[in-house]
Structures are given as C-alpha cells and as structure tokens.
Amino acid sequence: MKDLIDFRISLKLTQREMANEIGVSKSYYQKVEGSFKKPGRGFIEKFKETFPNKDIGIFF
Image (cartoon, rainbow, N blue to C red):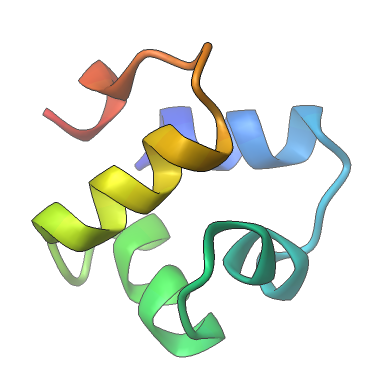
C-alpha cells in the first residue's frame, strides 16, 4: 500500500509508532502496509478515528 507508506513517512513515524497510534499490533500493521493482508473493518475504523482528515480511500 504505497499510499499508506507515503502517509506514514510524511508523519515521520516508524511502523511501530504508526501501529501504536492506530491501536493495532506492529505485525498486523506491517502486513497491511506490505499488502500481505487486507485491512479489516476494525483497522479502517481505528485509522479514521486517529486520522479523521485522511481519506480512507487509500485502502480501496
């Protein structure tokens, strides 16, 4: 997920920090960011709560 990677880098966060911000495990976040796993509804909801101004279209 290139858009997710670019967004995280723009915030100057590591994968661990981003996972902590969203409230998911680092391993789950890495799988989503690496496109090994599709983000679940819970992930998307937590992402939207954490970053309300970011378009969740990056996941689709």
